[in-house]
Amino acid sequence: MAAGTAGSTVLAAAGTAVETVLNRGLSVRHIRFMALGSAIGTGLFYGSASAIQKAGPAVLFAYIIGGAAVFMVMRALGEMAVRHPVSGSFGQYASRYLGPLAGFVTGWTYVFEMAIVAIADVTAFSIYMGFWFPQVDRWIWILAIICFLAALNLLSVKVFGELEFWFSLIKVTAIIAMIAGGAAIIVFGFQAGGSTVAPGLGNLVEHGGMFPNGFEGLLASFAVVMFAFGGIETIGVTAGEAADPRKVIPKAVNTVPVRVLLFYVLTLGVLMSLFPWNEIGSNGSPFVQIFSGLGIPAAPHILNAVVITAALSAINSDIFGAGRILFGLAKQGHAPASFGKVSRNGVPWMTVVMMTGILLVGVVLNAVIPEDVFLVIASIATFATVWVWVMILASHVAMKREIAREGLPASEFPSPWWPAASVLTIAFMAMVIVILGVFEESRVALYVGAVWLGVLVVAYRLWVRGHGRARAELVDETASIPVVETAR
Image 1 (cartoon, rainbow, N blue to C red):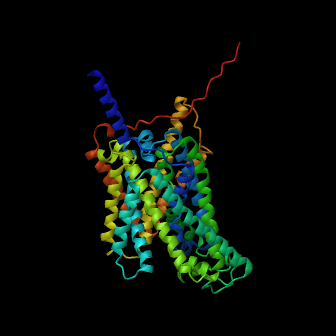
Image 2: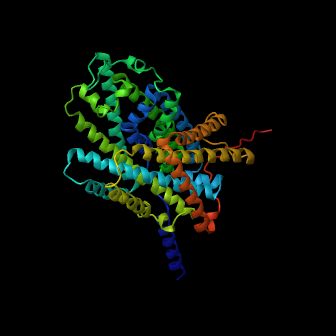
Image 3: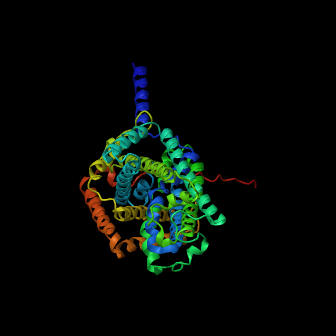
């Protein structure tokens, strides 16, 4: 009888483990391309034209400065992810080092960000499909892709990682082809499709100079520029499912931001060398114009296939990132306990169901949302993104202070130029939030953001109880430095 009871206990414990633990099935290849793909999408293919119109060629400086700031955020997140490789990521880090309210607000703000972007992405996907099938209603495409991606996300995380790897590879290959094609047009003197002037580097300075709209134009472009980098923090969310976080996270963090920066700067540099900055976006997609200039008649169809892939990749990452953060929130008592349940495949299935439900809102909203609200959506998403980044940096500062105060082992993947770089990056993020309020077209983001944060504070006070009011308990997996005693 005792033996049977013991056996039952073991089986029960095993069942509990299956239901509450995520599988570690993501390799360096998966995580590197997931983070790369999440930051290369709508912001580049469509948002870049809006940023260029605001700043002109000076937008290159905006991407360089923004990319440097994002790199510092990623290094701060990477240091915490190696020390505490949990799926809840920055939500749990904020709860541990800044307090449970900060963790609650940070986690739900990220979910809010992913929901906004995902609804925009599914709507964009339906528009892209309409290029080939104009007679089919948009909502049909939206419903189909939601069901398809939801089913894939219910499979093992390795399937998700593999799918995202190929999605991202297609996008990256297309961008490299565009850069190479644009360079060929410049070097060999082809006439870029639709351009009214000869291609060349001189186009960067011959149409009003590098700063045609002044310093104010450069500042205004940051609202769109920072939106373009949004989503790269997903790399921190993967820590709880990385096969070897101590090895995987540093490699991904150190390579992805640099690659994203190069892709954006090189791509836009080539674009503005081929076309005067004030013509970009006015004669159709500049990406189509480049392929047309190379004599490729199927250019519109090639680009449409690429942007469809980009949309699928973005929606896929949105579902994954928001789902894993919800899983972490459930573990902290900041979300319904059902979000912490895991399927036999190691997937938090209830979070996938919730994100699917949110995306279904896109089926309804698609009929009433105008197609020219990109800047509004980008601004709101930028506010949410920058807020999450500020919380990541603040959590990192608090962690570094605790390490120094309590004499804990030094981090295995420390953020460089501490503390000056962290302070400057926080100041830069605060400036971006101020910029959103200065310009009328993006000011709505502050209104929506302020209301959202207020709602979260009220929700925390009313509904979070018990262990949800306590700081998150995270295991420090930093390897201790062995002490070698010398013989006397």
